Length: 258
Image (cartoon, rainbow, N blue to C red; front, side):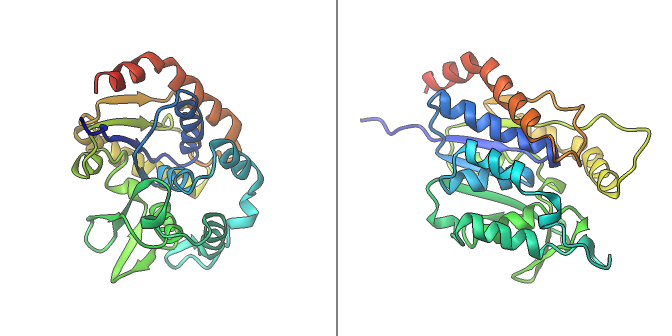
């Protein structure tokens, strides 16, 4: 009897645009697509990590709406970041039940960047809240995470849509979700926008070779969503859902070929 093919899902970084991953997961659940392994970078690590604990996309959306910025933004003297990150780590610890990655309902890979070496750091074990906190640590905004001698920041710095790692871990087919970039703004207001636009510009140059390894790439039309627009949960979720549903035939055709 043939073994069941392993289906991988790569959820890309993109700050507030990454909220669209909630809608993508809603659509895949509705289509009864069984994802075996998820990789996530930055916002993709956050949404994919929560989903891998068994939290439904609907509940993730409700949490995203209810958790106000004031609840997680513990501002500090900007020595290594304007947000200390302790509050958001405690929230993540509470929501994830202090679970370890290797004990989750679904195989999960979280990507971060070692600021000291510039190398990609892969989490396949350890506390989920620590891995997510590292992967979402936008340089200059969040203080980096010190972990096993490494200084970890946002995974999107080196691997915006982590596709190749899924292939390396044995995925037979990979669906990649690219939430894209914001339109470049001539008028930049927030420090958050400055940092993320800088990362976007760099990431555009390095992401294409890895992204092309995916068997199906779904690009979400989110360029009008600014990186700091975390209040647009419902709009981003709807775009993620509707775009995935528009790709329904491609998804099912791909999986039926396996």
